[in-house]
Image 1 (tube, rainbow, N blue to C red):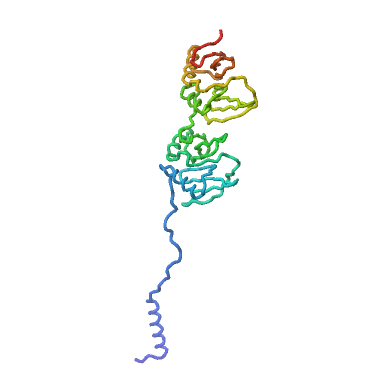
Image 2 (cartoon, rainbow, N blue to C red):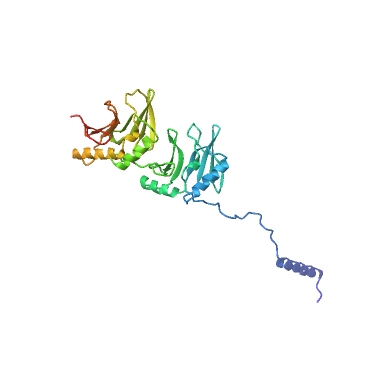
Length: 310
């Protein structure tokens, strides 16, 4: 049978349609980038990690003139001073760079962060958590506390108790000035490297241990309160108290004398309001210890001998 012209054309079109349906269509490769890896995360509580990141921050900043260091479990920053301007460098999102910060230079102490013991921040965080009864949002800072003295502190978020650490990582303890341990630590802190003082004492109600040093017509008082590092304050005042070597005062004798006075008065412990003053206010050849306990004064030599006038 012979097909007509229109039938031939329809057959040809159908063949072409079938051929088109069976053809394979190639798709060009996508230009959308595929993520290679996640942003690196560092744990600065691991031994040596905090020391390493501080070194990296110093290298990036190009100076050791620091006014603040902040370190938490995954973040670290260094605020430095150039001229009179503070700039903050930080480890963020896997790299180190300059970040916005509200830290400003207002004359605070400049320090070298490499001088601070950061090799075991985890231990400091553990100690702080025990004392503050919280480990929420812990952060370590190195910054001036007061009187041009820089300490390490551990804080929490929400804020609880700030815990202080010295440059070597040792704890600034919450001292009990009725114990030998507390008296010894407070004594070491207030005396420091002083070669002479005019007075040493313990303030009423455990207000702290202090030493006074006369400088011309000014008295410089250094105080160690039970929960805080030492601070100094000055006042315009003359003194007639003779200077003496603070090494003459022995914390062991102070503590044992306090115990003996309480035992004699049938007291289990020193009552609120007790105090101690060590000086030469009676114009004696050497200082004496003046204890005031339960309203009664007891005078002792530095060897612990009772010389109270009767």
